[in-house]
Length: 401
Image (cartoon, rainbow, N blue to C red; front, side, top):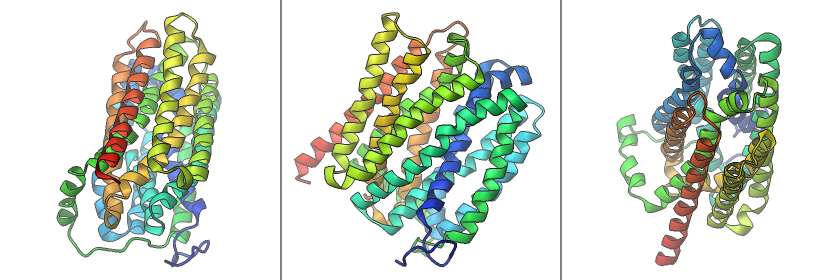
């Protein structure tokens, strides 16, 4: 494959393009979270209704990823990404002009098409390099990507306090236009196009779904990231209703998790080749579980507070940053010729599980609830990710891999 040349759409993209593309996907997920309580007041609905803008968005992201991967294997990464960005921009305009909660939720769900940025940035990496090198490169991509959502809730909280919640979506519109221009100019096609129908592409799913290796890596990734998605669904409530924080304060404390994620991604990028995928995943899941266990014990002892709650989520960010690049590279490596399909299917399972956990987090936090139900949900999800990767390691030893 040719060496990438900046702003040359006949060559593979530069890493900065993949970082910004995946970063926009992540930013769209979390920039407005500090605004959720205020948006509930603005639209005159309970917090639980507005919290569905997280769960429904994740659910549709999961559904879209099932088809985004095969479509990109058939028609190419470039066409799918450009089309997705255009649709995302149209949906973002819709959120800005929404006059009811229902209208907002419809356009918010339509924004989920930007999930293609996260799915296909991984697939493009796998097109370019293989196995541990892919884990290493994904680690660097997601480390850079994490810098964007790190400041997203901080900026979102400030914009909400100064201009109102619409400012968050206005910023997404501006940034989306910039990323579309960059992708158009820099991202050359990396997929080896397969002249088969979408139905034939979908028929490759049984081969993936019957692979124990695929399921092991995917479930490890799903429950590790599920801990984070539960946090996304419940943390705005905890910050506002339990601890009485402002949107700006909640946004600033969200950055602690992203700092941990950036450090974890750096470690993944540096050590994945040396340590190996399975051990990196195990280390990451153990780090997250340790942090959530400490937080649960402190909370049950009555020693929790905003700094303990948000501060210990740095362990979740650190663990996910270490785990997820290798877990993603793992399920992509099962069938390298179907990298887009595997990325879409694996991503769909991850995001679908995240949607369920985000919705469950909202259900566990009715008016008057404490933070403990959310913390126990996060701990259970992380502990399950440890079990999943231990199964993969045991299976590898049984077959001598």
